[in-house]
Amino acid sequence: MCRNIRTLFNFEPPATELEIRDASLQFVRKLSGFNVPSKANEAAFDKAVQQVADSARQLIAALVTSAEPKHRDVEAEKAKARSAARFAPRS
Image (cartoon, rainbow, N blue to C red; front, side):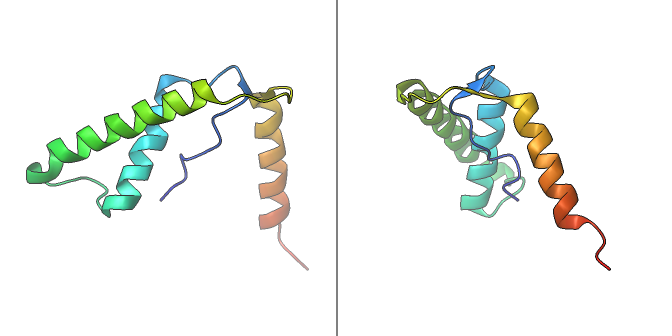
């Protein structure tokens, strides 16, 4: 359920608004237990997503590091290799 919540800090290129919103949406879904809220809860759900996204954006902007930024393509390849090793058929 939290597949879109990924580390967003210290990447090159920086996290996009869509990535921040997707992570926020997954976080609110997890907390609320709703994948899609009812009409009665829709406004509260949408407001929570926006507030979490705003907080995430502020956090990412405020964090500092001396580490070199990670490159998205390189990290994606590492993740693919880990996945392939994890799910490879075993004899």
